[in-house]
Image 1 (tube, rainbow, N blue to C red):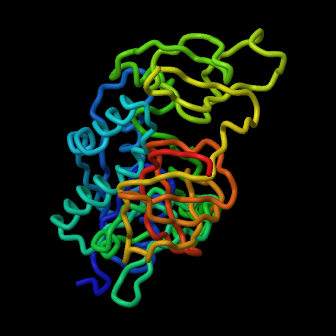
Image 2 (image 1 turned 180 degrees about the vertical axis):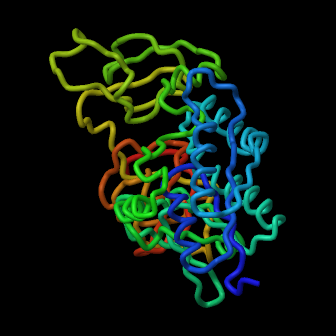
Length: 361
């Protein structure tokens, strides 16, 4: 019997989970792997690479001598992640399905399945760390600042953290690829996946139009001047530049146009040019708060991120009726309702919530 225990790694067919598996083997754990299929649509355009990913995962498992399980969680994904994703877009908001996928699929359904297979814990290729003291678990940022993924993990709870390992938390992406090449893993130079797996490289707006009806409205400038029609608020996000396709003739400036606001009541999209003041706000309200450990005593000061890979921003958190208000030291660009705000004290992730509204005070 292995004294360190049995670990089942979520092996995705990418380099990160491949090296996570390798590292656990080198640390002496009994390791098995599991490939999760979360999207069941027949994709004839080649945007979803599940078949290739499974093939790569199997080759890595064979190379490392670990058993690979495969399971289809697409029904769970549809119910727990994708339906929420669609409902939020219908409301004109911009959800973050990766955050929900971690909470509902990878660290719930996968965790439960792994435990049923006899695992003591699960592991993934996330760049984050878990520490344990004072009878509680803390989620820490990954040491590679460029790859830290604690933002996407902020909805995890004590039980989930107690049953999880993040082998890559202490090393850099560069080191991960070096280890993969050293051990001749097929994923060593495989391109990182971006965005949501089932969308892939396809046009995001076109993908959404498969599931959501078009609701034509006006795109206007800050004076209310009509510029062109849009096909629905759901297909745009705050701060968006690409895809607006606003040509010349609408102003004397050559500066690019950005989405500054989505007006739900009038079905209008407000666009501005350049680094416009209307893109910036210093206050937001947040709901659906989740704290990884004990809730901080409010009010408190900390740093926060309103999007992945953003530099941490100083802020104060205060009560605001039934929600919390976050006041930033410096105005933030493109605060987006529906996205997650995640709070930190130094390198500890405290938790986070959903952005509801933004304003200037």
